[in-house]
Structure formats: C-alpha cells, structure tokens
Length: 175
Image (cartoon, rainbow, N blue to C red):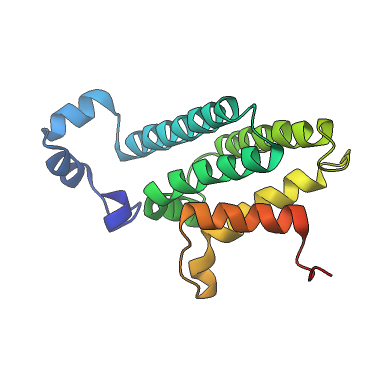
C-alpha cells in the first residue's frame, strides 16, 4: 500500500483491508502508521543483510569477481523486489538519521569485507582510504536510480555484471 499510495497516502484502514485483517488488529501490533512503516523498513533491512551474508558465505570459495558479482546480484534482486517502496523511502528520507546511517554502514561493512578478500587474493590493490568500497556503494545507488536519469531499469544480473566489469576493468578500451 505504501508503494501504491505513497508513504503519507496509505492509511491503516487501507493497509488492514489489503492484509485481510481488522484495523484493530493492526493497532494491537503497531501504535500508528509510522510504527508500522518503521517495522516494515526494519524487516526489509534485516532481510537484505541476511541475504547478503548468505551470499558472502555461499560464494566464499569462488573467485573474487564471482563473489563480488553475486553480492551485487543479491542486492539488486532485493531492491527490484521492493524497489517502489524503497525508492519512496529514499526520496522522503523517512526514518531517523541513525537508522539510515546504520543501514549504510552495514552495507559498507559487507562490501568492505569482500574487497579485503580481493586484496588478500591480490586481485585488487590495497585501499587504505576505502575509496573502492565508497565507489561501489555509489555505483549501486546509481544503478538503482537509473529511472531518474531517464533510463530503464536493468535486470539484477546485468546490473551486477556491469558494475563489477567496470570496477575491475575500467571504462577504457582494451588494446
């Protein structure tokens, strides 16, 4: 309902009707619409972090490029699944700054761990200033917001491949 009607347009009655429960049932679990929205955001954050952690474990033995690409596929698939809702949240900067910062840092930490694997395997050079991790976070956000540039969305695997290819090989022509 939030994705359809906006963060401020979806009322508890509409949400209850869509969920097939009485409005009172929602109020038994959530103080108000803001509390419900906060709980939904917390669940989406937790789901994404669990998926990323599982991807890191699942592909730990694969080469660095494969690990990085699968991590981005996981991220982009999650964002594709919940994209309309998450874009509304990002645009409105809903939630406390502390929660937004925590999520950004949690994502940063996961990509940083992965990049340290690449450094250990001597696939990428050392990056004591964490420029690479910052770049990848920005690249991910840019891919997700393609529609703001008048571009159509990419499939998660294509988007992930493009980010990793650019990161590892650059934009220059090969000789």
